[in-house]
Image (cartoon, rainbow, N blue to C red; front, side, top):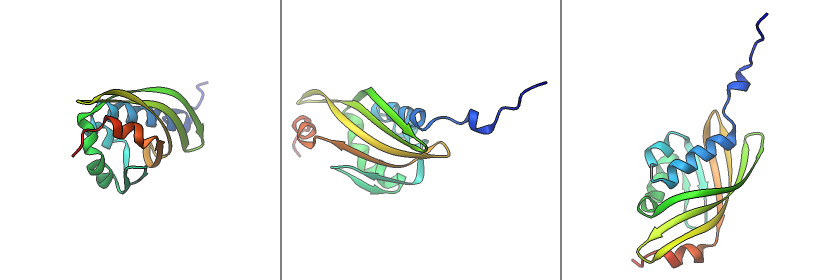
Length: 131
């Protein structure tokens, strides 16, 4: 007899959803990243706080020109939550760098519903052109 495979076994893990989102975002594919954000996505970071997917993407749009990928160092999952430690690659006229970041995200129905990111803002500011 054929075994029944539950719907849950087909579900994509929160870690996979976050990783796909992060890869798209750090490759400058904000439209692709948008597909993985819930409409009411909430973001909390040291340089940007946003309520809603559109507000977040508008606030983060300036990063599109300077992002240069990421290196995932470690991820943990707990239910719908995922914590990721990664290096966020940045390329600007002032130089290149990989900024260590920690992000705690919640995923529901295959989309990020919230994220909180922590990183050293001085390291980011040192690579950002003035103005």
